[in-house]
Amino acid sequence: MSKLQFERIWIEQCEAASRVKEHFGVAGALEYLIGEKLMTFAEVAERRAEFMQQLPDFLQEINAVFSLEEISEYATQLEFARALSPFQHNALRAISSASVHAH
Image (cartoon, rainbow, N blue to C red; front, side, top):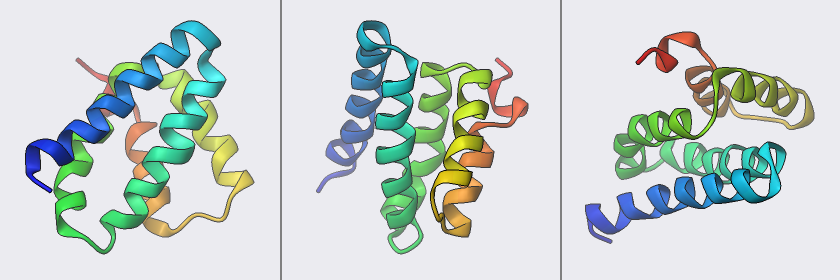
């Protein structure tokens, strides 16, 4: 898979989450993008360098879709609801910190 094709996947996932958020609400969009797509991406990034290289850009794009408050509340719920790897915890902390939301 080329870098462009690989990058396009998470960009399309972020675009889909924006549409879900707009049409069906924040909760479903958070579950789709963070609970499903990001957690899977972070799990794979622990083992595959091409995922690891794309992770910061994916996290940045997630921060463009959701507010800090939306992400922080969902991240707290997710950490209590699921068994997460340390790497998945770190990905959640990265998107739920105020420093990444400063533009």
